[in-house]
Amino acid sequence: MPSLRETCPAKVEEILRRFPQKPSAAIPLLYLAWETYGYISEEAMIETADILGTTPATIQGIATFYTMFPMNKRGKYHIEICQNISCHLVGAQDLTKRIENKLGIRCGECTGDGRFSLAKAECLAGCSWGPCLHINGKEYLQLTPEKAAEILDSLLRL
Amino acid sequence: MGTETRVLLEHLGAPNLLRAAGYRAKGGYSALEKALQSMTPAAVTDEVKKSQLKGRGGAGFPTGMKWDFLDRESGKPIYLCCNADESEPGACKDRIIIHENPHLLLEGILIACYAIGSRNAFIYIRGEFHRGAEILLSAIEDARNNGWIGENILNSGFSCYIQVYRGAGAYVCGEETGLLTSLEGKRGYPKNKPPFPAIAGLYGCPTIINNVETLSAIPAIVNQGGEWYASMGTEKSAGTRLLCLSGHVNKPGVYEVVLGTMTLREFIEDFGGGVPGGRSIKGVIPGGSSMPVLREEQLDVRLSFEDIQAIGSSLGAGAIIVMDETVDMVEICLLLAKFYEHESCGQCTPCREGTRWFAQILEGILQGEGREEDLELMLDICRSEYTSICPLWSAAVWPVRAFIKQFREEFIQKIKEAKPSAKNVRELAKAQ
Image (cartoon, rainbow over all chains, first blue to last red; front, top):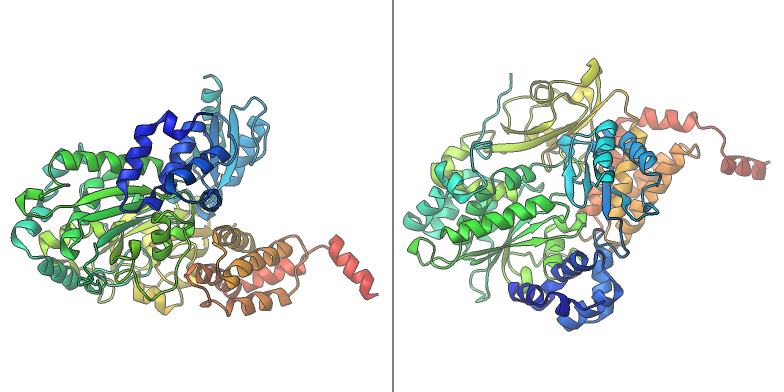
């Protein structure tokens, strides 16, 4: 796997220039690794540590603290379903069940063909428009199980 | 009949509002012009003090007073951090401003920076707000191209830069010191206070942290005066307030109201259109998931900080969650407990262990293994509420204590109805 400095040197430099102190670049560099490779690999953490002049253990400690950073490859379409109170009250459980049944996987799993991965999310701040979910970060609001199935169908056709 | 009073949401839906030109067409950036051309930084701070604007993130600390605490003599750079890490379940008001009127926030940040003597501002936005971060980045670029951000703005000698910093999914980073440690590129662990950020904040420099809604109120205060702003609302709840309404209501949404002009029940009826299916309300959480739940018979309370506080809860982050008669309150209590268990950073023992303990006990009750003593045990655990570095542990305690207090009969019923489980049978066998 080519390094970040080989793949996108300008972006690495631009991130480092943004901050008065170098360590602040840790989280943006981890985002860059995620965008570049699809997840935060061990190599990316070692390289991030090298760029920032710190230890890989420090970077791993940061990466694992934040729940959004994927430490393993996800599906081509990563679906996060909000489970918190406001979404729960308006049908998040039914939505989750319908999506699980449609994809044949449970939350925390990935389909065999690697196209879809599914996760439960803590609050996604769409509380007044629940239930909501994100697919690769794109927000879908006021869903019903039927609407969610239609969205999945449209992705399956792609 | 309650009506909205739109100050922050006034121009929502106006054409081209995401662009500086569209915002300008609605009078945008005129407050920044006014501040830079005819007011000293101290005069801006005075107007904010006169406005009695309190922080809209949840803690409600007076904004002008916070600005006054700043150590201006340290010789170190001064930073402004905009807290856009809106993570409290039930709250989704700040995203309205970010998504619909980002230049309002930018103008508020620029004026605040002018007042506190900062030339560097960070918007710390929660990682899940992908679209919000993109909108802000685009608005910053646009504002910079139009001369509102950068060197020597309006030839005033004032220079200011704004950066967006994305969090990556940690509720605790909404707490101000957690936010700062995260921005410094570390695990988002909160710190003990003092020193407060106004003395030693980002990179050890004096730092002001204000919420999105708070900063977005600044342009109107500068344009129309602090006294005008303070003339709205009650003595302790000045100005307008964004409230998110969610859960079992016909018309959930974000509404801007003058506090003190209606009761909580009227708000739910008039704005939310009541409960679907004609069902009755069982409980309402008035300020986001950490705030103590109220029973239906308490809803005739006047909608203001002080009145809701007087009946044992709080408007907190301005998130009103309505639960109808069909809701299982033990289940909701567990759902909230599990959220705080998940989000505890683990630094403090009461929070790390207590949140897990709550979740285990509540799971036990729901699985038919509860005992009446469990309720006393949980209330006993609640007694350690102020023993952690940051308020996350208190935020976990308040809902559990309130759910037990307000819906004790439901917990007891759940425990009594429990069928003997394998564990109970084993214990019974042992006892015999």
